[in-house]
Image (tube, rainbow, N blue to C red; front, side, top):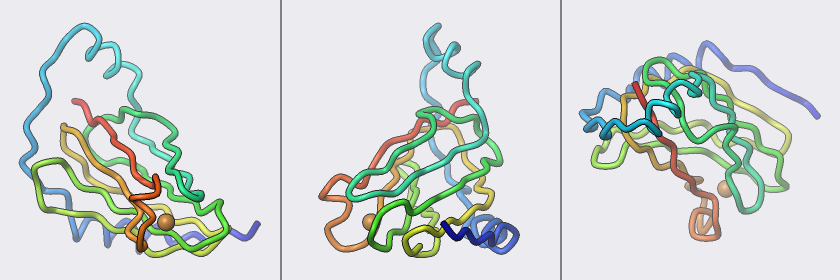
Length: 133
Ligand SMILES: [Cu+2]
């Protein structure tokens, strides 16, 4: 499988689009604190037909190392947005076997992730992610 790294460029683009969004912080609970302790600032998203497979459901707020990998048979992209905000992060469209990684600044809240190719999200390529302090 060929892999392509565009780390710096991707990181800069993600930062430029910036998730400088005022997402409200979720309420804290013991369960929330436990999840926060388990959270990491690295997230891998595998794209296949027609699912997004996240390496974890919770990440720590701040710079998040995001890795998107197309392990399917069709091209896919990845979009992220904090619920209630408009600032959207878009990764380049990947062809099968390719990957993109970069750094995305994320604020606490719930994010929706999806593939924007026609019908892909409707067919199941969407997921939610919790970002905690
Ligand atoms: Cu797709």
